[in-house]
Structure formats: structure tokens, C-alpha cells
Length: 317
Length: 317
Image 1 (tube, rainbow over the protein chains, first blue to last red):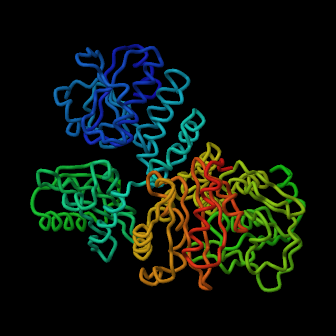
Image 2 (tube, chains in turn cyan, purple):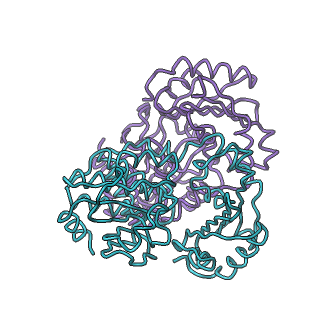
Image 3 (tube, rainbow over the protein chains, first blue to last red):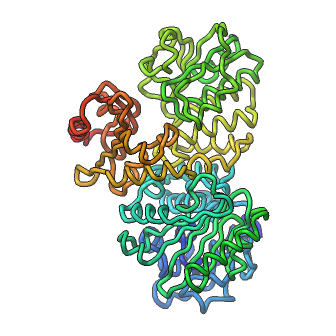
């Protein structure tokens, strides 16, 4: 459906519940909270299903909109959720029930009855902004702030290659609608001391291959403990490995509490992150994807390196 | 003068030489090169005076526009130059001769015969863009790229608090004019290994005061040698000290080859960087200023800490 059709669809209905994906980032939580607030602004009843995996940076954003126990919704709306395989962990019983999916992932599986998909958008927040403007003609300061967080999270504050003129224009409109321009200083430029410690350990342990154009960084539970790092320190941790000059493809492997490896793959001018992760049952975007691998650190590393080399000459689409 | 008046002024004249400030950043070099290219696009003769202090990241941007030996200019134009005290080192004999200053520093001393000053602009590049659009109605891909570098350098790629809707809109227009959107990945997200090593040393040596809301980081010649770091690794090095959560005012002291301390002061919600640096004969913006201090590391630190405390409750304007 188009943005106008989506706004009309929302206008004609009521009693919404909003869900998103597991391990939610700023785009997921920002969109869920902003859509909820925007719907209420338009006179609707709307709630966000609490996401138990939201970290301490993002959880407070959605907290004011969480559905009370026993809330009887009529329409289920998902934001930033490409497929039901990564639905938020407490929404397994809602699979197959999504009425509307608003998303920007090209890999959206079409699981919802209606879908507003704009893969050209760098962040789902851009789409939510346009839909709310069609719905109400304005967004308030708080909604603008939530959407600015959404857009800047998914674009690394306008630094990632997905940033396009439309992204920057939506950013300008959100600042004009009242989003504070010092938000990015807090979100992107400030780091806890524990995070800085963890980063220096990751950098010390980086392994390079493909003539220095690819590298693998590791985050073990032991490194976490040594740094005093917690969940919130892991936000966008994949960017640490990717920051070395000359590196096109970077992999970050995070040890999970049950001894598996949560893997993030980022590619640049070449290498298809989606295809690499698909080999291990994962996926995402062409330049940023994820998967989960079992086995020892060394065997997981070897398999990942081989997959990177296999997809080296593919375009990151 | 207004932007239109500035464009008209340029249209009526010819044979320009463009200068900027010492230790030029991306805004200074990007603006100088872009203005030169834009003037040529409008049929004018224009050159940039080579800036011997441009580092290896920025020097190539202006290289194609450098004035040949003996170039006889008729009009001297400065960009991003607030006062003649910080004129580029090889332009001392041009002091008092600037015909037009295009600048965004509120502290512009009015040294030029004509001045286009827009202190609301985050980057001088925004002003150059508007002037060139008035002059020619378009900028080419290469000029847009130079201006995108200018704008993103001065705003930390749209992360600093100076970023405003106009900044983002100019960014959008520059992307549409052909500036590559992966520029920021190279400029802001990639770091040489030597730079990463230097950063970890700065972080290890950070000293906090004012209840952890202020800190001082140091870069000695010894640390540079240990890291294998060169001049290019020092670009925006002041941001390293400023990135710790809870820090409002950060100071970075760099040892110079002749044993002095080149100081950068960054402030946040409070503290006036301009006033702090003015105590030592320096200046700049309310939130980002610089000065040069003589003496031992310890005495310089003590004097700086005292100055920070004195101006703690001032607004960063």
C-alpha cells in the first residue's frame, strides 16, 4: 500500500497494538513509540507491546506507551519487522496475526495482511514520519524526538551509506518539529567508560584477512566482565570492527550466555552481508546482516571467513 | 552584506585569490576549493593560495586549484577566517588586504572591506553553497562533494549541537547535486590503526575534575611516537576527550615541537569555551575554541582547570 493508503487504513480503524523485532534498536523502539503517540494524537487508542529485550537506553522511550495487562487490541501493527522469525520474543503467539506491517527492509517477507514497504528509506522512522503527517498534518515535539532517534540510529547519525537526501530532509523537518539537536551528542558521541574499555579490547584482538580488507572482532563474556560492560555497552558494537581504514567487510562475534555466537556482518562497496548470513540461517540488509552460529570460537571464525570469501565479489544489495 | 549582494559582488569582479585560516580543517579547505571551482564555473579566474599546513586528508582537495607562482590577483577573498591573527601561515603579507570575508564565526573581527557573515550557519560551507547557487544556479558534482566535506567536518557529520534544519537541508541538496553518500563512512567512521592506538592512550590518561563533568586529555610527542601517529592522525583529536558520558567540558592539550601546548576546549550545555581560551589569548566559538599555552604540562593543566571552573556557569555562546 502507499503512504496515503496506510494513513487512510489507520484513520478508519481503532484499538491498535504495536510490535517490532527482537533485540530492538533505536529505529524499532523509536518507531513503535512514535507511531503509538501519533495515533493517540489522532484520537486513537494505541499501545506498544513491551519489548523485554529493549536495553536501558531505548526501553524508557517506549515505557509510557506500554499496553496494560489484558489490553484487547483489534488491529496488530508491526514496525521495522522484516519477518516473523525475528518477532519480539514475547510475541510468538501473535505470529500470523499482523494486520499491517510498516517496514523498510527489502527482505520483508509479506507476512502481514497489509504492508507499507519503502525499501529506499534508510530508516523505518522516515516512513512513520510521513504516515503520521498524512494522518494528522503534524507531529509534536516528543514524537519528533522519537523519530529523530529512529532515523539517526539506523543511519549512524547520517554517516552510513544508506543516508540519502530524503533522510536528511526528514531529519531537518524533525528538528523543526522540536527534536533537540543535542540528542546526537548524547546518542552518538558519548560513551560510558566501560564501553571505551571494551572497545579497546576488541581493537586489540582484531584479526585481519583478505589482504586487510576484512576483519573479525570478538566480544567474549570474559571481555565483558573485565570491562565492567553490560548489555547497554553492546549497542552498535559491530561498528568497532568496521572502523579500521581499508576494511570493507567486518564481522563481530558476540558470545551469548548459552555459548553460541551472535554474529554481525557489515560490508562496504562489495560483499553481500545478507548472502553471507543466509548461509547460517540469518539475514538482514545487503550491507548489514546478522546470524547465530554454534560451535567453538575458532570453528565459527573459520566458517565465517570462508563465507565472506565466497561472497566477496557480490554487490551489497 | 547579504548572500545576494555577495553573489553580485563576485559577479561584477574577476581574478580572485582565496585564502583561509592556519591549521585548516575540512570546512576551510572544502570552502576554499569549492568557491574557487564555483567561480571558475561562473567564468571567472580564481585560485586558492596553497595552505602549507593542510594535512594529507584535506590537502589533495585544494591541490587542483592552487595559484601558480606569480599569480596577480585583483581581489582577495577569505573563507572561514574569523580574524587575521589566525590567517594561513604563508599569507602574513596579505593582512589588511582582504576584499571579502565569507564566514560563520560570530567572533569575525570585521577585518575585510566587505563581509558576508552568517553566524547561524553551522559550517561556512553552507554559506558558500548558497552564494554559488545565487551566482550560477547550480553546483557540479565535484563542488558539491567539496561542500559536503566542509559541512560534515564542522558538524561532526551532523552530530554536533550546531546542526540545524538548514544544515541538514543543505546536506540533502549537496547529495542531490552528486556528493557521494559514502563519503562520511571514509571521513568519519574509518580510522587508521595508528589513530586507534593513539586514542586508546589518550583515554587511558584522561583526568577528570568538576565531579566528572570536565576532563583533560593529553597528547605528548612521546605518545605520538609510540602510536606511530602522524599529523593526519590528529584531525579532530579533541573529540576523543569529549566522548566520555557525563563530561560537559573537555580539554585536549597537544605538545608542539617547540614544547608549547596547543589547547582545544569543547563545552556542552554550560561553560564558555571562547571565554576560557580568551584568558590565554585564544578564541573561537562558544562551544569550541583554542589557544596556545607555554610552560610545563602540570602548570598548564592547573591554569586551564582554574579557567574552566571560573567560566563554568556561563552559557556557551
